[in-house]
Length: 421
Image (tube, rainbow, N blue to C red):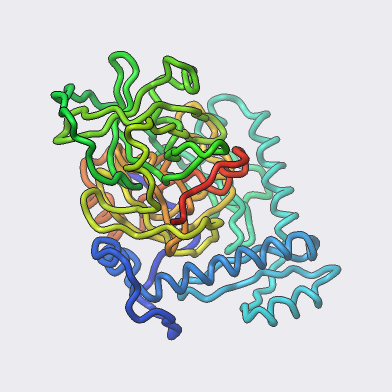
């Protein structure tokens, strides 16, 4: 059980609804509307509005990091969806204040700039490298906590020694994130001439290498630099990573009635380590099924993806997975390092969302924008989400979903695109 969580570290969704509602009847699927109301307790229009504001915050932050490096302390949405910019004292403070005011953002005065916090994060990582295995093995990651203007550290248990510049209140005890999807599926009977219907983000698939099979969720449909049809999903969903891109690469199959169905493609590229993503090259006979920009609960109506987003603390996000469907939360950490098993995931973001084995590889959206790929969960050992969600409601120990940003995948693979039509 989680003793504390990053949802307490920053904040969670509230029932407050801002007055701006630019789209009174947004075209969102019923399952997503229900998840937004249940988990975020805001209207669908407000969900879209906050997602849009978050990207305005992201654009401002990109400029401010370059123009005001000595004073910019980060930017986020508060628990009412309002944009906030943190500024420290120093050269450029007045100009940064004017820029934030002009953008309509609230300014919060802080002691440390984001650059200073990055220096503390690097110092902590150097300190950790010098610690004995008994200590370093229990540290699950470190993140710049802009909302509290400090560094936050995730650990497995209380009482671990920390360097003096780490605020004890920002040492967060949580269950180790898990990314495990193993499942054996019986071979389905051949379906002669059955082409099948559309396949979208959130639909289930099975990856097969020899006698090993994994059950995961499709991520975002796209195209690679050559124009070939692909799907972007999780790296750990490939049961034979070294073979990716070769003739003997692991195959991806449709799942029908909990049985292996038609072969859909094979893994063109898989990365598992500091990143967690795979690019599945779709077979010619299945490519028309992936020629869409949709994300959905399997078998239900979909939301069309019309762009790619940058993770922003406080932004509303929803994941879709073939096991648990749509569920929503807010981003509570970005650009973080987190230990998942024996690997260290970097540049990850997290949100207070439940995900279970089988959801991995599925899409995370903010508004109608592609944001991330589900990578690891702090509650993956529970049989259903209702249990950790109830625990979180009673104790504040919300589930945590760790994700691979889509923007990083695209930057690592020039010419790779997410479908937006």
